Length: 434
Ligand code: ASP
Image 1: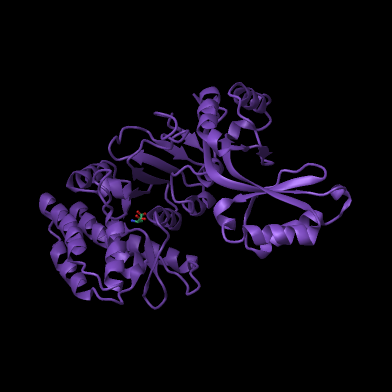
Image 2: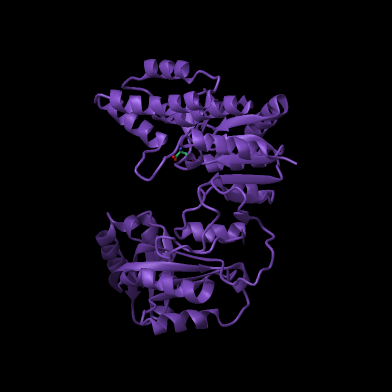
């Protein structure tokens, strides 16, 4: 039995956090593959090493003095080495990096040094072998991962060294130049390694005790979710719950490798388990998430229902402007197309003109719409949930602008005015989750 153990930046922010990580890794011999992010924030006013590296890159590029930023980065790493008496001498690598700093340094290379140096420190501290992600995660020049080659390399490295620390967040092109993943991408590194080694568990350690059933900025101390399916997680993260990088589940889902989200500061807490076959608990609604800033194009035309192809023609206009569509609630001679407001920022008026001209229809725009998703694997084929939702919102005098449910009945999406967003989440949480 093997476990991939990934630690996020907050679990690696200083020597104290490093010590917690060591206790966690050493307390279970199955934890043989460790993935690390770069040193994160020590408190809310602090700056992540990754962000400092991005700033450093901008300073270099625009020839702005960068000594202060460099010193901040240098000190953070060296402090961890000194405080923990780690034998790997990070100063040497940092001095080499300092000499490489110049106006044209690659952004991907410079920013990846956060995870690289963190992994080097951690490998020395744990007594595990450092394996560079550039030798494991192989990308083709089109940016797609060469899955076969990656798997081969990961297996080779693991069988050669047995216990390894790998920096997250980057890989390399065939010529060796580095490619960063998108922000938060160390989660994905952990997931890829889990898949390649077909491990029994992928542990993802952060500073919260699992996934919360609602946004804690709206609901004070929401419940932590014990078990959640990959599909439920996808719905919640798509609708704004910030949990894992959204590409994390895909590699492990194929092999049904569970992900356990755990808290480095409270390792005894079971956290949240993400997997396919969750226990059938009594919980009907697993969680609630939502986002503001949607906009609806309301399109109407007499006898539209008799015109074959009308919807297709309308949607092709959105396609022309490369706008992705969220929902299409419809009536008989009218329908609306709900999109993310940012996606039409630059083409909103052109879209309306084209829609009017090509469809000969009335078109109006309604802005400031918020969408709220009520997600639960146990909602399917169960009556009364919409009843509770409408009753709750009716009592609060909140008007429902749109309603959608996917065919799997895994989620119900409610559209309300943005001003009612927080109250909608609060009242639904109270009646469906708490
Ligand atoms: N350090 C990177 C970031 O801040 C990657 C990660 O933490 O996963 O986005």
